[in-house]
Amino acid sequence: MRPVLVVSGGDIWLISTPFGRRGFFYHAWVDGCPSWRRIKVPAPDCPRILAANLARDRRVMGDRWFRQEYLCEFAANDETLFPRNSSARQLNMTSNHSFLRII
Image (cartoon, rainbow, N blue to C red):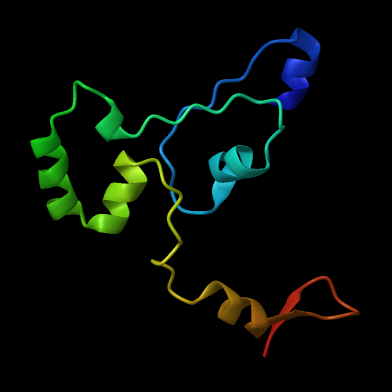
């Protein structure tokens, strides 16, 4: 998207809820340009959302998903099949080949 903005001088609006500490939206929020304006509006701050509905959804969804979807938190990626550092250790780049060798 940035090449388009260089030509047009326009703005980019990224609107999303967090989905773990990964992906484009997370990196744009955490590592994006310091001059970017970031607006965070957790659901309890919105007067149109009833506290009873939030309490119900927290019970139904569980705390982690609720915090991610309603409180705008980048939750840890707990739902991976293998821990991130564990799977990274199992893959080594070979020095003479351009493929991964599983050990």
